[in-house]
Image 1 (cartoon, rainbow, N blue to C red):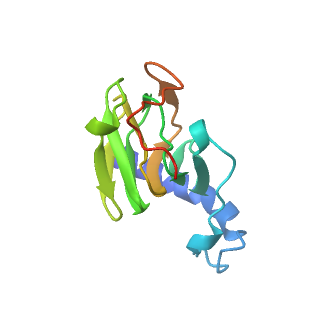
Image 2: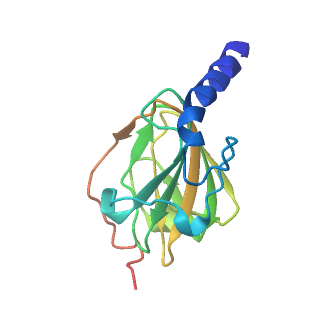
Length: 161
């Protein structure tokens, strides 16, 4: 356990010099990032967007990302190589487990709620009729592996209005 904490501290310190140069830094290592300036990039699976807030999920150490799911957009079944901790920032985030996607079986998770996704467990998630923004924290490197059919869009999943 002590070695895990030591690795965590070392990984944070390794990232700190880069963060000190951030335009959102106060010059003392603190970072202030207004919600409207979160750097969401590109389009992921089905139209979701991702922003790396801290660290790098592909490298060793702590990372924080945000994922924005537009209305009606969801991921296909997948799993991650490491545990992930998620907090719903806004909207309602719909979660399901296993390889079969069904909005009727999804669990609605409202803003302010926490979800733990254990490593290796198949799940899928997304937005219903409203946009959902999620903040995810984990320790990298982390990989995402598809599980089950791809490009699935079940008829019972709400379409964007």
